[in-house]
Image (cartoon, rainbow, N blue to C red; front, side, top):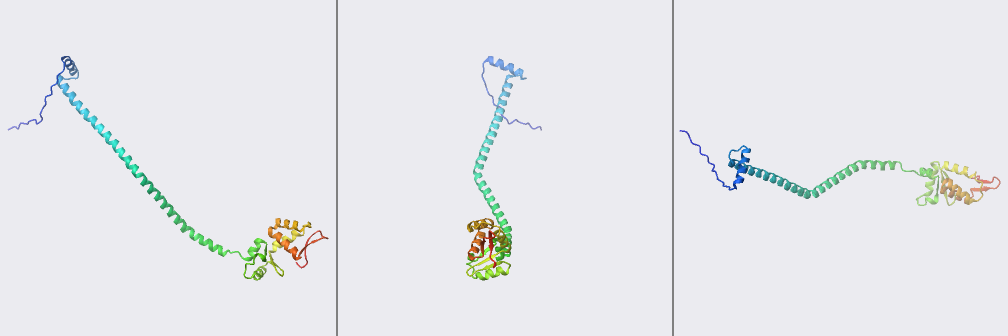
Length: 233
């Protein structure tokens, strides 16, 4: 026995009243479009319009969703930016701190080595004398035993002039140059000579000349027309 299939869809009749002239025009358009009846053409127009409307609505919904999504994304970005910046700053500071620690690890041994080298290269009394050329006892009164200091310089090769109340230590090369220069000066005025020697040998050169004149070790030779050292020097 053959089973009958019943269409479950129900048809709905839609009645539209239009002027006769309009109907004639519609009939011509329907035939031109390939429809035998105007009713079929009208039905197709309705269905097409509904489907087009659904498609347009779907497009509108899609654009609306994209617009809302972008707005939400911007809002989230605005909220996260301050925290992201703080995280970046913190990361940068941590990196700088780590770098500083690493540099300290490298520099510390170098600094220790430099200190050790400085200790090993500590200047001796004779080194200081060679740099200055002359050392006066009134400059080292802070020493516990100045006499021992000058004895040590003398034993290291320095020339030491002993006076009752004063000691003067001289580097040999400095002393030789000082004497040679002094013997070429024909100026009689002691103050002018002192200034001249100070310009050539520094402040200590002028000071040395002044002291030696006062001690009688240096005098102006009228016959030679130059400055000379006493025979005892």
